[in-house]
Length: 327
Image (cartoon, rainbow, N blue to C red; front, top):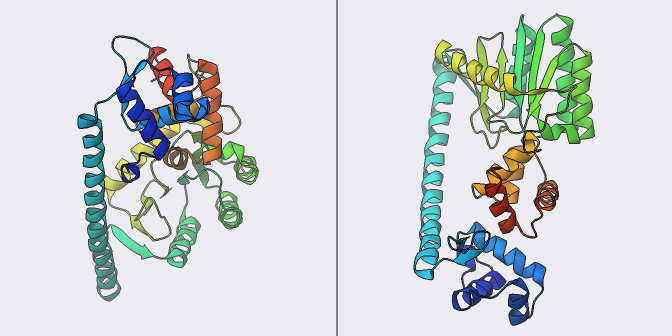
């Protein structure tokens, strides 16, 4: 009945049961609903993600169901807001596309606007990257989100990288920590280092970018789909801001020849970011996208974290992580 609100059938049954019988433990709920303990724990995790279960004030380490007048109404409002947001995003996308097409058409007729140059399609983007790489004289700096990279794109990048390094131009590249787990991408990073480039990694990156000679920035029109188009920016204020972002992330990144250090809680930066993203309500898929990880890897990492916390469910892991100051 409540699938449209994100509540699947067994989770709904567990929620209804808890509203009537808050004294039941996992085993008792499993017996009452003719299911397994693990399925009940999964349902509890799901209810916690939907904020239909909250930590108990009276019994630390346990949970309490949120009244349907509050919890279900909030889910309904969120669903309505999400639908409205999607409709607004579609309308905004249509306007943005129309604006880009209009600007591109005007630029084709009247010459490009000073400070910004719009390009649509992968062929135009790749051609411009090749030209900018060939013209670079000091440095090419880049952010490379996405974790594992396409082998064909790696080979194309190698040709440009070799030409750039042969002219003595510096290369600085920031990738995701997850690229260390992909053989071809890691081999590419190590090849860059052998060529004299510098490569570092961080758990998450905000956007794909290229910066040439600290004077020209090359950015995607749509960060979620870099193949749609790109804009080349040379306006000094924008380039300074982009450079500041790059340098800040670079200073906090780990060189490819070193391993990321664990913090005082024994967590790797990638694990810390995963916990943060999931605690903010992201799904495994969305968190994995931010970190360049597959859903399988996200679940494996969470299973390892749960084992270290001695938790048998994600909800319990969240409580224990919060008590230990991990969140």
